[in-house]
Image (cartoon, rainbow, N blue to C red; front, top):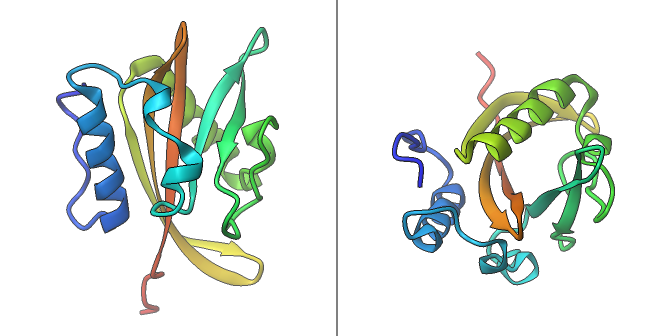
Length: 152
C-alpha cells in the first residue's frame, strides 16, 4: 500500500468512497483484481472500468467496462485499446499516467477543470488504482463528472 498517496481535500465523495474500498481490500499490499466486480460496483460507481495490458505489444486495453451510463468521453469498449477512447489532446498525459501507475503500484488522481465534449463543458476527476492480476497488474479506473467551475 503506497504510504504517500492521499486524495486532495474536496475530492468527489464517490472517488473517496471507492478509494476507501481499494484501501480496505489492499490489506498492506496491492489487492487482487477479483476483489473488484466492475458490473456489481458500477451500480454505485457508474463510470468504472478495469484496464489491462495485452502482450506482447504492451497495449492498454479495456477489460471490463460499466455500460449503464453514457461516458463523458469516447465510450470504452471491452477488449479495445484505451487510446481509442481518450480525447486526442489528452492521449499522452492519460497513457503516461496509466503506465506509471501500473509500473509504480501507486494510485493516481487527476482533475480537469474544463473540457469540451459534444458542445458542452465538462469537469472530470479520475482515480486510477493498481491491482494484482495473475502474474501482472491491472488498473481499476473511476471517473466522476463534477460541476464545471463558474465563469469569472
